[in-house]
Amino acid sequence: MSPPPPPPGATADAVAAPRGAPVAPANIGQRFKKGSFCALLVFCVFASGILLGTIFFDVIRDGGGKLSLDF
Amino acid sequence: MAPPEVVTSPGAFSEPGEGSLSYPPRRGEQVIRVLLMAAAVLSVLTTVGIVLSLLLPAITFFRDEAGIFEFLFGGTWDPRISQKYGVWPLINGTLLVTGIALLVAIPLGLGTALYLSEYARPRVRRAVKPVIELLAGVPTIVFGFFVLTFFTPEVIKGLLNVDVGTRTALGAGVIMGFMVIPTVASVSEDGLSAVPQSLREGAYGLGASKVQVSLRVVFPAALSGVVAAIVLGASRAIGETMIVLLGAGLMPNTGIDPRPGYETMTTYIGATAQGDIPTGSLVYKTVFAVGITLFVMTLLMNIVSIRFVRRFRQVYE
Image (cartoon, rainbow over all chains, first blue to last red):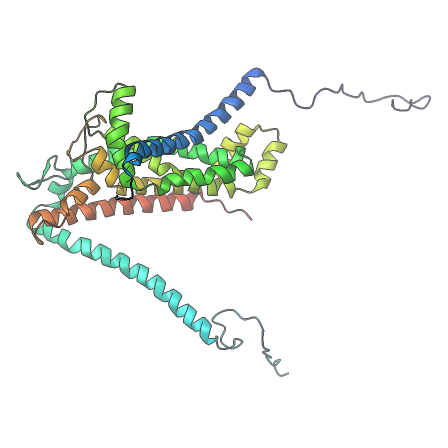
């Protein structure tokens, strides 16, 4: 809806600024930086998980076959 | 005009120590207070006892066998055969293995903490955090065997093709770093989560991205907690014995090459104090001299970190 017209004889002393997007969308570089940072953090979590899994695997591989009721 | 009469009533609030307005404490509360005080005094007495038990034999060692200057700055540690008491190789080994461990633990631990605090959904956080903390529950002897039988021969020698022996500071340091990750991650995650949400919202309101909020707002605000986490992790690494004993061996070295084996202060104490050395002998005294050196090192580190934490601490309401 357009604003009402000024009354006859009135002079306009201000001009509305053209409206654009308030925040510019992120460019490819910013998106890549954001994604790679998140991936880096996920890798940090996975590194611990991988080591934990490897230890369990190694312990079970070496000692699992030697478990028996006699033991 | 007479002063107004002070009327006390059952249930009237009074601060501890305001005798005129307070009722005598209940007997149960007195018992609890005494028990709590006894617990605190017991902790202090235990610490004093440990220090004294270390200090007295160490003093006789420094008085009778080696001066403090020779002990701290001598480059050869061979108390059994040539009776040389330069502890620097043990300090060097301790610092090297701890440094390698922290190089692994600080980035991975802080990355894990930032992910859990800022990026992970609550469900993911509830699932992942116990798994990470499971690493802290693995006995260190298991880590030690893991270094000796798998990580050094299969990963460092086999996969990465690095020329190392059976015992190497590299393998012990890296695996010790993984052992320290839960300490660094858990304590620093607590610090990051304690940063008020209003700070994040303010930064988002100013147009900051999530990376900027995490690294430039939340992380600096939680710096004291992060430093406390790192110091805790370093203390744990310095005091660790079994991983280094099995993974890095008992070779006093003064270099900084991480490939050969090294001996740390804890491994010397652990390997020497096995009950077959005569009480009061020279080797017996060296154990205490090394022990008090380790104690002073960790004490200094804690004092510095406490000063740092107090200086950068930010209190939010």
